[in-house]
View 1 (tube, helix red, strand yellow):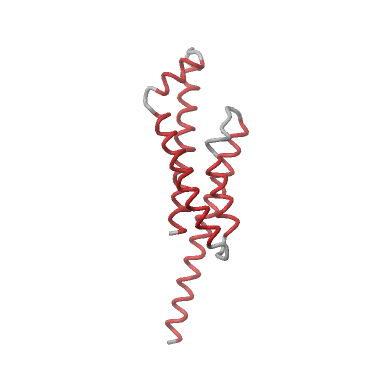
View 2 (tube, rainbow, N blue to C red):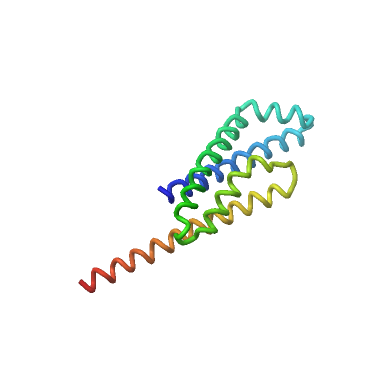
Amino acid sequence: MNRFFNIAVGAAGLLYVLNDTYFRMMVNLYVHQGFSEKQAEQIANSSDIFIIIIFLAIAMVAFGVFALISNLILFYQRLFFLKVCLNVITMLMPFVYVKNGWFLLYEGLFCGIFVTYLLSLRKLDAQKSNLTEKVQKIR
């Protein structure tokens, strides 16, 4: 269950980053075409992308709380600090939003930690399967 919550938090965060990037690109496209910033945001929001972003923010916080509690209970497992950092960064993402380059770095940090977590899980699964094969050969 712990793994599910961590991956769910990461997946919701990744979808949040993609939707936010799409929204920003649409606003910039409309501003480039001559609309004001406010008009461009209204036009870009006509596709209800902002509602999806709000829903993803709620999902990130909900899954993040469960994942964080689960990680704190299972603190002895591997990748504890990586999982806690992933959860905290993801849960704070909707609340630290600003319209500048710093938030892009924050989103990049999140993506880097999530990819690192997924690669670490893959490595742990490979080690576990190798160990299982060795034990079966011994028997």
